Image 1 (spheres, rainbow, N blue to C red):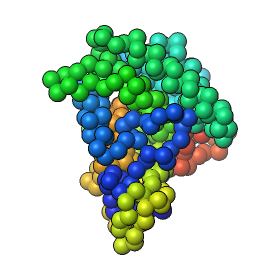
Image 2 (image 1 turned 90 degrees about the vertical axis):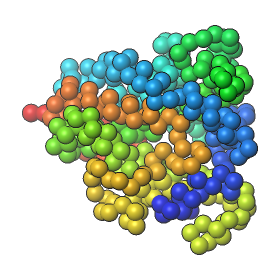
Image 3 (image 1 turned 180 degrees about the vertical axis):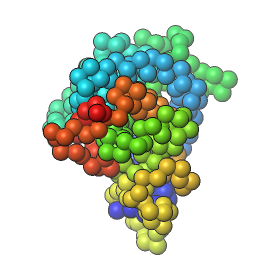
Image 4 (image 1 turned 135 degrees about the vertical axis):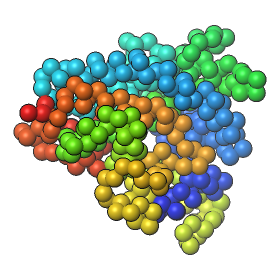
Length: 342
C-alpha cells in the first residue's frame, strides 16, 4: 500500500514497473484502452485520445451541458431543496458522456443502468458483470461501426479519423476507449459534485466566492484534492523496483492511495484544511502516462453544477431533517440533502 504523495506519484509515473493490465476487471473481454496497454502501445493510443479530447473540444460541450445542469437543478429550486446526489450528480456525468460521444439522448438511462450493473451494488455477481460487459461492448461496437467513414464533431468520429500524423484508431480500439469512459467518467464526477454541494451547504460563505471564474477554478482544484473522489488506484508490479526505500517485487499487487497522498503533510500545509489557491499539485486525476484523459470534462461538470446550484438556490444549506454528511468523505450515490437559504 502506497500512501505518501512521493510514492504514489512514483508508482503512477512508472508505467514500466507498474501496470493496470489484469488488475481491473469490469466485465470487459479485452483490455480497456488506453489504461490497460503495454508501455510500447500506450503512447500511440494516448496520443490519439489526447489529440481528439482537447480542452477546445470539451469547451464546445459547455452550452448544452450547462442547459442540462439547469434542467436537473430546476426541480430542486422549485421544491426549495432536495437530494443533489440523486437529482443532479447521478445524471449529469451520463449526459456528458452522451454529448461527448454523440449518443442518442434516449439511451441515457440504458447507459446509466449498464454502468451500475458493472460498478453498482450488483457488481459482486461476476456472471451479471460479465453479461453487462458484453452488452456494453456490443453497444459501443455498433456505435463505432455506424460512424466509420463519417465526419462529425464527436469524439468517436475524431478517433476514427486520421490526421496528418495518421493517429486514427481501429474500431475495436475506439469501442474500448468508449467502454473505459463509461466506467471511469461517471462515479468520480458524481462524488465530486456531491462533495461540492455538501461543502457549500456547510460552508455557505464559499457560495459567493465561487461566482468569480478564477475563484471557481481554484475552488474546484482544492475540492478535488480535499474530497478525494478517487480513493485509490490499483496496480501490479511487473518489474521489481524500489519505492520509498522499499523493494516492490514483481507480481506484487499495489494500491496507490490517492486520497492519502493528497493529504500528505510533507507536501500540503495543513492538509485537512480546505484552502484554495494551493500551488502544490494534487493527484486526484492520477499522474504520469495514465493521467485522466477526461480531467477537463470532469472540471467543467463540477464547475457548472456549482455555478447553477448557487444561482438557483442562493444561500442553500444542509437539510436539518437529515444527517449532514462529511463533505470530504462522500462517495457516488451518497445522499446530499439541501434546502433553500432562509
